[in-house]
Image 1 (tube, rainbow, N blue to C red):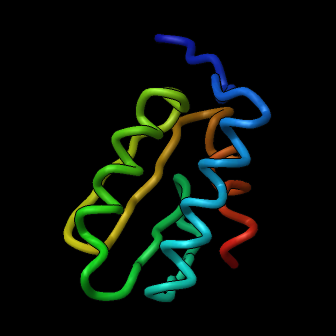
Image 2 (image 1 turned 45 degrees about the vertical axis):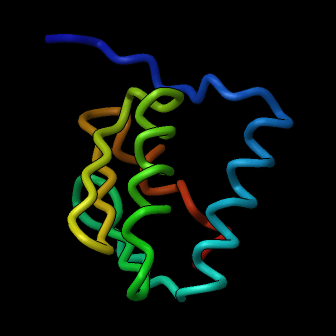
Length: 95
């Protein structure tokens, strides 16, 4: 079994800037955050596909311990094993 490191590679400033980008997207479109057995499902309003796709691509680079899947305006973030609680704790500022 492959062991994943459960950590974000962003610096403090990078993390703050990324968080602001997520909050701006949610503030503009609205977001529904639902906890799932393996992580989270975030559903954004219409017209967010481009920004959501860009943000998910960036998250795949810095938070490789999670799987980031975008379908339209829905983002599924999932983890396995010890990563599940970490994923479920993400996006607390959007709830």
